Image 1 (cartoon, rainbow over the protein chains, first blue to last red):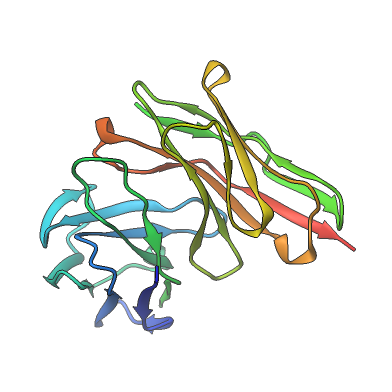
Image 2: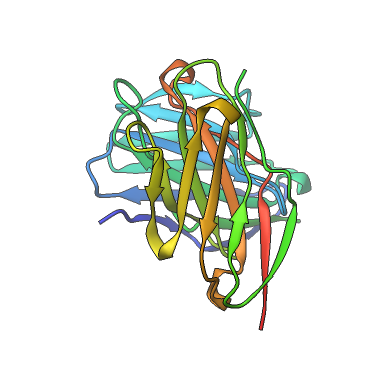
Length: 115
Length: 114
Protein backbone atom coordinates (compact mmCIF):
# COMPACT_ATOMS: atom_id res chain seq x y z
CA UNK A 1 0.00 0.00 0.00
CA UNK A 2 1.51 3.32 -1.10
CA UNK A 3 -1.27 5.60 0.06
CA UNK A 4 -0.85 9.07 1.43
CA UNK A 5 -4.08 10.75 2.49
CA UNK A 6 -4.76 14.45 2.81
CA UNK A 7 -7.61 16.38 4.36
CA UNK A 8 -9.48 18.45 3.51
CA UNK A 9 -9.70 18.08 -0.26
CA UNK A 10 -10.75 21.69 -0.68
CA UNK A 11 -10.39 24.68 1.62
CA UNK A 12 -11.55 28.27 1.27
CA UNK A 13 -10.27 30.73 3.83
CA UNK A 14 -10.11 34.42 4.43
CA UNK A 15 -6.88 36.28 4.99
CA UNK A 16 -7.50 36.54 8.73
CA UNK A 17 -8.42 32.90 9.25
CA UNK A 18 -6.37 30.14 10.84
CA UNK A 19 -6.68 26.70 9.30
CA UNK A 20 -4.70 23.48 9.12
CA UNK A 21 -3.98 20.91 6.45
CA UNK A 22 -3.48 17.32 7.47
CA UNK A 23 -1.48 14.53 5.88
CA UNK A 24 -1.28 10.91 6.97
CA UNK A 25 0.63 7.83 5.85
CA UNK A 26 0.77 4.32 7.25
CA UNK A 27 3.65 2.96 5.23
CA UNK A 28 6.18 3.29 8.02
CA UNK A 29 7.92 6.09 6.15
CA UNK A 30 10.16 8.35 8.23
CA UNK A 31 10.39 11.30 5.83
CA UNK A 32 7.47 13.55 4.97
CA UNK A 33 7.26 16.56 2.68
CA UNK A 34 5.05 19.55 1.92
CA UNK A 35 4.93 20.94 -1.61
CA UNK A 36 3.08 23.87 -3.10
CA UNK A 37 1.87 23.67 -6.69
CA UNK A 38 0.50 26.60 -8.65
CA UNK A 39 -1.59 26.00 -11.75
CA UNK A 40 0.36 24.71 -14.76
CA UNK A 41 3.59 24.59 -12.73
CA UNK A 42 5.59 21.77 -11.15
CA UNK A 43 5.48 21.21 -7.39
CA UNK A 44 7.79 23.36 -5.29
CA UNK A 45 9.26 21.93 -2.11
CA UNK A 46 8.35 23.77 1.09
CA UNK A 47 9.38 21.59 4.03
CA UNK A 48 10.96 18.22 4.75
CA UNK A 49 10.66 16.28 7.99
CA UNK A 50 13.00 13.43 8.72
CA UNK A 51 12.34 11.28 11.79
CA UNK A 52 9.83 13.89 12.97
CA UNK A 53 12.39 16.68 12.89
CA UNK A 54 12.31 19.56 10.44
CA UNK A 55 15.31 19.06 8.16
CA UNK A 56 14.57 21.43 5.29
CA UNK A 57 12.69 24.74 5.18
CA UNK A 58 12.88 26.23 1.71
CA UNK A 59 12.65 29.81 3.01
CA UNK A 60 8.90 29.55 3.38
CA UNK A 61 7.10 32.57 4.93
CA UNK A 62 6.23 32.16 8.60
CA UNK A 63 2.51 32.29 7.85
CA UNK A 64 3.03 28.60 6.96
CA UNK A 65 3.90 26.54 10.02
CA UNK A 66 4.57 22.81 9.68
CA UNK A 67 4.20 20.28 12.44
CA UNK A 68 4.98 16.59 12.65
CA UNK A 69 3.23 15.19 15.76
CA UNK A 70 4.32 11.62 15.04
CA UNK A 71 5.87 9.55 12.29
CA UNK A 72 2.54 9.07 10.49
CA UNK A 73 1.15 12.57 10.62
CA UNK A 74 2.14 15.88 9.09
CA UNK A 75 0.25 19.12 9.52
CA UNK A 76 0.55 22.48 7.86
CA UNK A 77 -0.86 25.35 9.91
CA UNK A 78 -1.97 28.38 7.95
CA UNK A 79 -2.40 31.88 9.33
CA UNK A 80 -2.84 35.28 7.71
CA UNK A 81 -2.41 33.92 4.21
CA UNK A 82 -2.44 36.03 1.07
CA UNK A 83 -4.46 35.43 -2.10
CA UNK A 84 -1.25 34.46 -3.90
CA UNK A 85 -0.96 31.51 -1.52
CA UNK A 86 -3.91 29.90 -3.30
CA UNK A 87 -2.59 26.66 -4.74
CA UNK A 88 -2.66 22.88 -4.55
CA UNK A 89 -0.76 21.73 -1.45
CA UNK A 90 0.73 18.30 -1.81
CA UNK A 91 2.07 16.04 0.87
CA UNK A 92 4.53 13.25 0.14
CA UNK A 93 6.39 10.62 2.10
CA UNK A 94 9.41 8.41 1.58
CA UNK A 95 11.18 5.71 3.52
CA UNK A 96 13.97 7.99 4.71
CA UNK A 97 16.08 10.89 3.47
CA UNK A 98 19.39 9.34 4.47
CA UNK A 99 21.21 6.40 2.93
CA UNK A 100 20.06 5.03 -0.37
CA UNK A 101 17.77 6.40 -3.09
CA UNK A 102 14.29 7.35 -2.04
CA UNK A 103 10.96 7.32 -3.79
CA UNK A 104 8.45 9.93 -2.78
CA UNK A 105 4.78 8.98 -2.77
CA UNK A 106 2.30 11.80 -3.07
CA UNK A 107 -1.13 12.40 -1.64
CA UNK A 108 -4.05 13.77 -3.66
CA UNK A 109 -3.51 17.30 -2.41
CA UNK A 110 -5.58 20.03 -0.78
CA UNK A 111 -6.88 22.72 -3.10
CA UNK A 112 -6.62 25.98 -1.15
CA UNK A 113 -8.33 29.23 -2.09
CA UNK A 114 -7.53 32.36 -0.10
CA UNK A 115 -10.02 35.19 -0.42
CA UNK B 1 22.80 22.66 -9.11
CA UNK B 2 20.43 20.07 -10.45
CA UNK B 3 17.87 20.87 -13.12
CA UNK B 4 15.39 19.14 -15.40
CA UNK B 5 14.18 20.26 -18.79
CA UNK B 6 11.09 18.96 -20.49
CA UNK B 7 11.27 20.62 -23.91
CA UNK B 8 7.67 19.94 -24.91
CA UNK B 9 5.02 21.90 -23.04
CA UNK B 10 2.15 20.27 -24.90
CA UNK B 11 1.89 17.13 -26.97
CA UNK B 12 -1.22 15.99 -28.83
CA UNK B 13 -1.40 12.37 -29.86
CA UNK B 14 -4.10 10.22 -31.40
CA UNK B 15 -5.50 7.35 -29.40
CA UNK B 16 -3.61 4.19 -30.28
CA UNK B 17 -0.54 6.07 -31.47
CA UNK B 18 2.82 5.93 -29.75
CA UNK B 19 3.99 8.57 -27.31
CA UNK B 20 7.43 9.80 -26.36
CA UNK B 21 8.06 12.50 -23.78
CA UNK B 22 11.50 14.02 -23.54
CA UNK B 23 13.41 14.73 -20.37
CA UNK B 24 16.93 16.11 -20.02
CA UNK B 25 18.59 16.53 -16.67
CA UNK B 26 21.64 18.13 -15.17
CA UNK B 27 23.09 16.56 -12.05
CA UNK B 28 26.64 16.42 -10.81
CA UNK B 29 26.56 12.93 -9.36
CA UNK B 30 24.65 9.69 -9.85
CA UNK B 31 21.08 10.75 -10.57
CA UNK B 32 17.90 9.13 -9.39
CA UNK B 33 15.27 9.72 -12.06
CA UNK B 34 11.50 9.60 -11.86
CA UNK B 35 8.45 10.08 -14.01
CA UNK B 36 5.21 11.13 -12.35
CA UNK B 37 1.77 11.62 -13.88
CA UNK B 38 -0.84 14.07 -12.63
CA UNK B 39 -4.46 14.11 -13.70
CA UNK B 40 -6.30 17.44 -13.32
CA UNK B 41 -6.76 18.42 -9.69
CA UNK B 42 -5.06 15.26 -8.47
CA UNK B 43 -1.81 14.36 -6.79
CA UNK B 44 1.22 12.90 -8.48
CA UNK B 45 1.34 9.20 -9.25
CA UNK B 46 4.69 7.49 -9.73
CA UNK B 47 4.98 5.89 -13.17
CA UNK B 48 8.53 4.57 -12.91
CA UNK B 49 11.96 5.28 -11.54
CA UNK B 50 15.60 4.65 -12.31
CA UNK B 51 18.23 4.23 -9.64
CA UNK B 52 20.80 1.91 -11.21
CA UNK B 53 21.17 -1.21 -13.32
CA UNK B 54 19.23 -1.88 -16.51
CA UNK B 55 18.84 1.43 -18.31
CA UNK B 56 15.43 0.48 -19.74
CA UNK B 57 12.88 0.56 -16.96
CA UNK B 58 9.31 -0.59 -17.06
CA UNK B 59 6.57 1.18 -15.19
CA UNK B 60 2.87 1.07 -14.62
CA UNK B 61 0.18 1.60 -17.25
CA UNK B 62 2.42 0.28 -20.04
CA UNK B 63 5.02 3.05 -19.79
CA UNK B 64 8.76 2.58 -20.09
CA UNK B 65 11.73 4.93 -19.95
CA UNK B 66 15.33 4.71 -21.04
CA UNK B 67 18.22 6.27 -19.17
CA UNK B 68 20.98 7.52 -21.45
CA UNK B 69 23.86 8.86 -19.41
CA UNK B 70 25.76 10.14 -22.45
CA UNK B 71 22.80 12.29 -23.44
CA UNK B 72 21.66 13.14 -19.89
CA UNK B 73 18.22 12.00 -20.91
CA UNK B 74 15.43 9.91 -19.45
CA UNK B 75 12.70 9.81 -22.08
CA UNK B 76 9.32 8.25 -21.40
CA UNK B 77 7.53 6.10 -23.98
CA UNK B 78 4.30 4.26 -24.48
CA UNK B 79 3.62 2.18 -27.60
CA UNK B 80 -0.13 2.76 -27.75
CA UNK B 81 -1.85 5.63 -25.98
CA UNK B 82 -5.27 5.35 -24.38
CA UNK B 83 -7.64 8.27 -23.82
CA UNK B 84 -7.05 7.89 -20.07
CA UNK B 85 -3.38 8.83 -20.58
CA UNK B 86 -4.35 12.45 -21.06
CA UNK B 87 -2.63 14.19 -18.15
CA UNK B 88 0.40 16.23 -17.08
CA UNK B 89 3.67 14.35 -16.93
CA UNK B 90 6.59 15.43 -14.77
CA UNK B 91 10.16 14.21 -14.95
CA UNK B 92 12.19 14.64 -11.76
CA UNK B 93 15.77 14.14 -10.64
CA UNK B 94 17.10 13.60 -7.15
CA UNK B 95 20.04 11.99 -5.47
CA UNK B 96 22.04 11.55 -2.32
CA UNK B 97 24.15 14.60 -3.09
CA UNK B 98 20.99 16.72 -2.96
CA UNK B 99 19.69 15.11 0.21
CA UNK B 100 17.12 13.29 -1.90
CA UNK B 101 15.41 16.56 -2.78
CA UNK B 102 13.49 16.24 -6.02
CA UNK B 103 13.83 18.78 -8.79
CA UNK B 104 10.96 18.68 -11.25
CA UNK B 105 10.83 19.61 -14.89
CA UNK B 106 8.20 22.04 -16.07
CA UNK B 107 5.88 19.27 -17.15
CA UNK B 108 4.41 18.12 -20.45
CA UNK B 109 0.66 18.17 -20.95
CA UNK B 110 -0.54 15.28 -23.10
CA UNK B 111 -3.80 15.59 -25.00
CA UNK B 112 -5.28 12.49 -26.61
CA UNK B 113 -7.41 12.81 -29.73
CA UNK B 114 -10.08 10.18 -30.38
